Image (cartoon, rainbow, N blue to C red; front, side, top):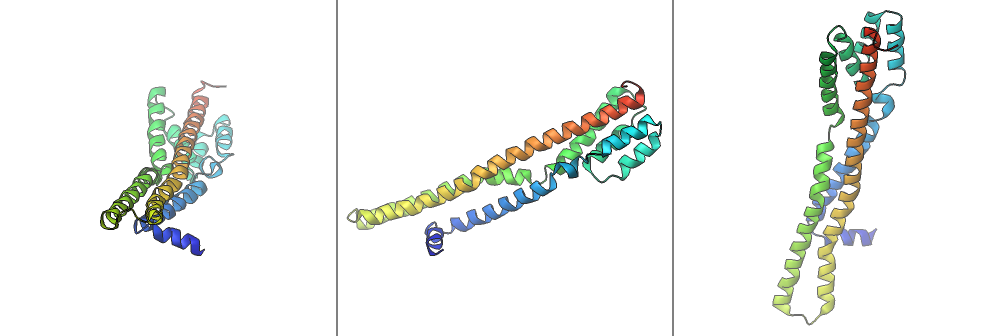
Length: 205
C-alpha cells in the first residue's frame, strides 16, 4: 500500500486529476452496464403479447399495453401503433423519430465516457512533459553527476502517462461496446414495431 501511495505522489498533482477521471469512468461504466440490460430495454414478452392482441383484432389493447410499458421498446411500439393507419413511409418515419429519442436516452453519459477516454492520455502526457521539464531544470542547476537522480525523475515523469493510458484503454473499449449495443437494441426495437404494424395492415401473415 505504501508503494502505491509513493507512486501516486510521485506523479504530482495531475495524478489527482487522473484519479478523479478514473472514478467517473468507472461510475459511468457500472451505471450503463445496469441500465442497458436487454431485459430492461427490450422486455422479452412485450412484442409477443402485443402481437397476440393484434391477431385478436384488439388494436386498442395493444396500444394501451405499449403506452403503459415503461421500457424503450414500449415507446417505439406505441409510436408505430399510433400511426398504424397512415402510409408505411409515415409510419417508418415516426418509428425512427422515436428511435432517435430512445438513442439519446440510452446513450446518456457515453459522450462523457468518450471524452474521458480521449483526454486521459493527454493529461498523462502533460504530466510527463511537466516532469521532464523539472528533470532538465535539475540538469541545468546540478549537472548530470548523479544519473540515479535523473533516472528517478524520468520514471516519475512517465508515471502519469502510464496511468492515463490505463484509464483510456478500458474507457475506449467500453465506450465502443455501449455504442454498438445501443445501435443494435434500437434496430431490433424498430424492426419489432414495423412487424407489428405490418400485421395490423395485413402485410404480414
